[in-house]
Image (cartoon, rainbow, N blue to C red; front, side):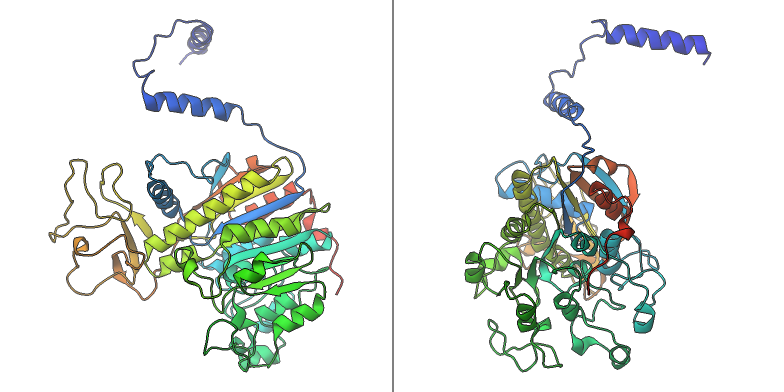
Length: 501
């Protein structure tokens, strides 16, 4: 188009924008149109915060892909008696977002070890590797020496900031371990898992690395499961009758932690959690293995706090003049997906959203960067043509109120998995004959596997606070670390003061 025509059109547009020449749109009173206009006005008021962050809170929904976010949003709304499809979660309300590429250095689909390492250190590495760079092969203990990468939390401790980690998984599991551990195999959680050659080469298990963490005064808060990783085989578990620790070196690392932190408190049940002193470091190991699913937490014999309760308690202890860095992981979203149990997975994601809402109401966003993301996705699918308001865990009922049938004459559910334990090798069972909303129901899947696999598609990151506007477009997962470090004012984060050993 000639330049003079473009100029003319631009001028007409300016005139119309400055006058009432545009006709009233027929959809102007439509409820969706009105809501979108209000949403636009709210977004026009958002201004980037380029101040320095004093604190950073990183929420990780393990396995919380976009399909999980959508299904959990609907589940959350429906359980509250609302329209699930139009429900807004606390995560949805965060003003800045991006898509995140989650591949590992050596894998198209990642596990939690390299993805969590990307988030905490700013580099991609190999599957099953924690806190080491891309050059270190799996299980190669000698190669790990010199291949360590420093985490955001280790740098923070070097600057006298407070640090904490909260997880519903074992505290030695891959994602929380990426806060403090450096290991050539994520499974080396206690000494009994170390191969002989790794022991001979001087490798240290993940539980020991937490207790012996050499950075400043160590983690101020560590809440999660995994007591057995810290207790010897000769010591009975205080809660689970007939069980004991897993360590074969005879060491009680909970006692060693108390020796290292004489002003600290070790706890393992709800009563002790409620009675925590106001100050001092705390190690809370609330289960022998992973913590209970949120839906089953009330059945725990000794009781255990929720993710939201642990998160708020952690912030209480971390707040101070020097600032803090905190990771909060909803680890059991991933575990429920591996089981093919969508109900459990969605309710874990809903609990994570409660924690995000509680934090957003609690912190000062002028100096606190809040980041919510996932380490990787899962192969959960939302499919079919269910009518608005159809139970997200139910069989597909179409807009005419009829149960949809597949070619085999059976109904099918809105949620399913590409692979996992819900697959069968014979004729497909009719889900109408089962309670598909039950917590124990395993959604049907295509490929029979004992454990549903991770998904490789991009995940979301949402954020609010200083420099949150840098999360836009499509980004590499390891950029999230760099944004957090930049927000904290670490222009050259690799040159922060090394720890005293």
